[in-house]
Image (cartoon, rainbow, N blue to C red; front, top):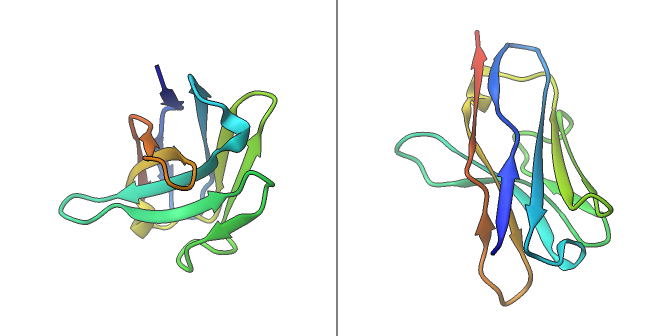
Length: 116
């Protein structure tokens, strides 16, 4: 059974930092591209960052220079380091795993709230 278990989110002030982690089981982690999405009420899920099997990252323009995605294949875990957080970063953050041609597997979501 595939499971993606995210760390708890939390509340942080504007300009603060937070690190999310997502531990995978039931999949061959090293062959999956890993993603972080976020969603606010009434909106579509938005891609925040992705990291390829080879470790190449990509980012949405809105978080470029502030967020860093990384992965540890020895621990089947992906991370999202979020710095200089802004109120507009407030959302539920989801990790996901996918290989080309396959479905997305999703984590349970972590609420991140940035206070102004």
